[in-house]
Length: 249
Image 1 (cartoon, rainbow, N blue to C red):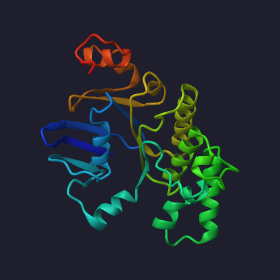
Image 2: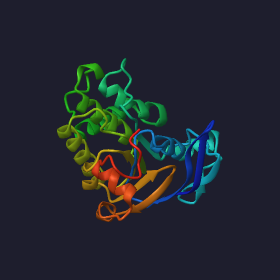
Image 3: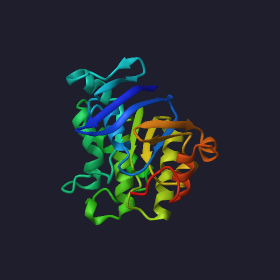
Image 4: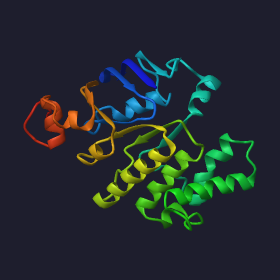
């Protein structure tokens, strides 16, 4: 379980997180929605230990990771997989080597044959069999997203973070990537934390949804609960309406 209490972060005069409190249950798909530039990725970077909060605390299971550094933080990160916004594949590496990279860096006890087998297995699981020899600029955007997901899962993490995993894809590919994530989650039972503004598509894959607005979580619930919420902020956001409490700036 991931537990966040009263997380606060400011950059100069800009208060991005103003008291975020959220619990993510083990094994669930939690999707955090909200406006672009509203702090979703900043929140995710705190969970990854890439940013330190001005106030508040973060627990992973029973471990308070808020002030962890060095090897202690690395031990927590060994349980993580991350799908970065845009995929963040290495252009100079083949798709195969991109996926194998975490194994070579983190699993030093594995031999070349085991790394090859695990990497080829992940290629197959994301539908990229036969594409491992290609470079990122030689494959489609959807294939790059699949490769990024395979790289995040190759170390068999307990928790996987997805930072806008479908940014830049057309609606058909968005749907395909979402269904791939659901299929992989069903198979491997990892805890998934995703930030996204893909509405209404995320309601088909989330087990729970949290709405981040003005630096706080305004509501958390199952997709149906969020869709039927009486909160005008949520209704304006999920319906894409111009009129309402959210200013269209």
